[in-house]
Image (cartoon, rainbow, N blue to C red):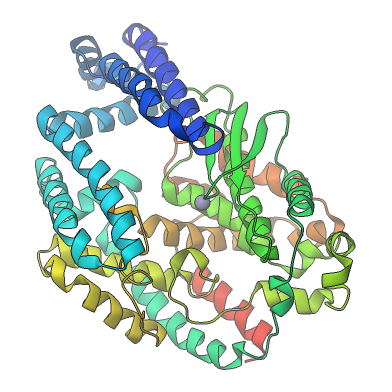
Amino acid sequence: MSKTFEKLQPYLDKSMALQTARNLFEWDDQTTAPFEAAEYTSKVIGILSDEYMKSMVNDDVRKLLKKLQEDKEQEELTETEKAIVKELGKTYEQLESIPPEEYRAFSELTSVSSRRWAKAKKDNKFDDFAPYLKKVIEFKKKFAGYRAKKDKTPYEILLGDYDECFMMKELDTFFDRVKAEIIPLLKEVAKKSETIDKSYNYLNYDIEKQKEFCKYLSGYVGFDFNRGVIAESAHPFTLQLHNHDVRITDRYMEDNLESAMFSIIHESGHAIYEMNIDDAITQTLVGGGASMGMHESQSRFYENIIGRSKSFWEPIYGKLVDTYPDNLKNIDLDHFIKGINKAAPNLIRTEADELSYSIHIIVRYEIEKMIFNDEVAVEELPEIWNKKYQEYMGITPSSDAEGILQDTHWSWGEFGYFPSYAIGTAVASQIHACIMEKMPLDDYLKEGNLIPIREFLRDYIHKYGAVKNTNQILQEVCGEEFNVEYYVNYLKEKYTKLYGL
Ligand code: ZN
């Protein structure tokens, strides 16, 4: 370890500890904290956050960082240390570009605007939210402007915060291909979708039995209960303190069998990623996933590509039927597989099927581009949203609540985030294609043996954390960088076969 890096280490350790404490409060808030705790606990969190900022942003760290960025110092660093310095540099650039009083004003604004969004969604009144959204956008444009570079537009600055490998050029190419291939396919599938009877999914399913089966599923795909726990929350999510403490949640609905099952497989995919990150880098700045998109690729690989395949269910479908004999005794495996892969145009992103999912993201991406290119006024957004849904899906939202108001992201100023979901989905298909060349994936699934798959993902992707970026990982796994054709082929092949097109 270089002398300079050694001096930096105690600062990194302290900020990591404070960040871990904040995460633990976040977990507690979403799962077990009593309703009235928020106001008093937020005082504690405020102090922890201040301390976190001070431990990270101060003259000592600034000087050490600057020195470590010099060529001579870089030569002395290991690959991991270099990645940590790069990550710290990004954090500094982000934090220091914004004047503290503006950052505070923005934080106050988003806490109000997110509440206004929730109310406007409930009341189905975009106009009540519009003035707040306008202010949030103004702030984001200004903040992005502070970091603007010659080769990047303000919107690309925001995109880069989530994945440095996907700027507008890459995303335009990606989404143009998806539009050209998947929109016509979805329209074909839609015509046949009604022939699949999925009413069994909406019968009554005992919640306690669901919890038991979901726990089984989670362990089945490889969630390690010695390093993780499962709790309940309003929306399923994953949160890690480090690679030996990874927590996931699920949500159970009495009249929906699939919802909790596929959520738990999804969150287990995120969790397995975190659990497999190397001991040497956990609790460092590169001790999380490579990017939002890469994280999402792992959860969707487990949820959709493996989890919705016939081979996956072959060894365990009997157990599901035994859990709910009255509801499922007449539903054979083929029927069930068609049910869990039923696809049709739809309006709500979070409930979308695998085939239509990226279309939802394209609508958001195109609108975000318009916003940051100053091509649209906030008042016009609902109309543009509805037009795009009509054009791509062939259906129009009947209200803003199921249209432009459905997602919370923009109320928090999270612009540039949505593409990560689609990148993840497409990356998962690419990894799938490459895994199939390297091992008899289907045979393993039919045997109920998921260990080789998990070990492969660990060795090629998970263990590196954020030391490598999305394209570097793909290069290693597949011998090439991101390539949208894998995704297009996967969807075309799967749905043509499933629907007999
Ligand atoms: Zn996810």
